[in-house]
Length: 285
Length: 118
Image (cartoon, rainbow over all chains, first blue to last red; front, side):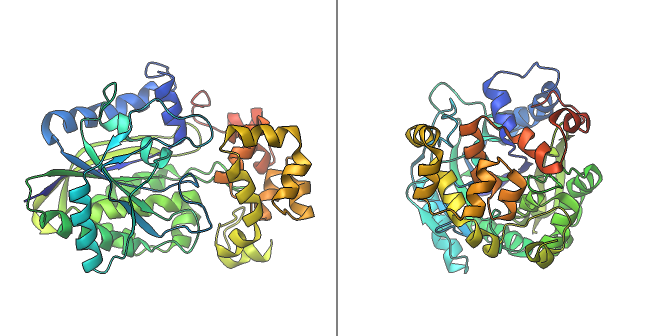
């Protein structure tokens, strides 16, 4: 039986990807960030040893445009390309998928009343790419894990509710646990934390809110799932509303979780965070 | 405060909902086309002709001519898309943000915890 062996929350700020590609790991402004991810990367490599990663992200108009923007979409392919967002393609290997596992997830989710848009082709932009090499070390041409990209609309309202995202996570857990193969599955929820990229309030960061989020996502995710988009955006910025993607991850974990690592850094215009969780007990969230 | 903002009531914030998306559709569609190098070249060669191809309103065209990112936002431009226009024109995220805040880039950087982390 497949099982979920790790839950990660991570920012997907594109400047992190640029700093990574420009090898700024030892740059004083960036070192804290890269050092902050290092223990998580080590834990994933040495203890978690995941076979597949379900990574929850949003596309930024790269693969999906506003002419038809899905609320939830999932990859069901054997490989996924690194997208060019218009600034040049990042020097990362393309990603191996696991089509049979994806197919099982799709069947299970749809039977569970989550009607996903299912994609045989999906080029992945910074929403997906940013966290990956900070969590798993890519080789020259390959990754140590297979991936299932899961997209959530967080760019054009109406967004799905936090509650819906949490329930999607719960359905994902049921889907994973009904897969007969002994796969070790990690789930990553990306985005946030607080930031705003539009209007006079550009640059808003709310460190206090972010720090509370990192605790409450562990202890009381159901309360976070009840927050309205307006409440989240008022406190954490319009684009901070994307934190609902962390609720998909959290819904897929157990009711009680154990924190393995937490890091927070707010250098410029986004509260950047990574949170590593493992399941505790067997009661689903 | 505009009617669009009133729907959400968050000061200094333009929530990108279907109303604003419909209003800015032509702008965002044009900007999205700039992810291809040949389109960026065509844009730079003749901005007016490129804007005309996408049926932008006169107001939207003027906001782009003025590089007025706040006005473009009010008219439905979404930053995720108009960043591609910014990249074409040599306007980066942080200078665009400073302008929307009504600050100089230097003053904006002073408000950041680690302004070197760009």
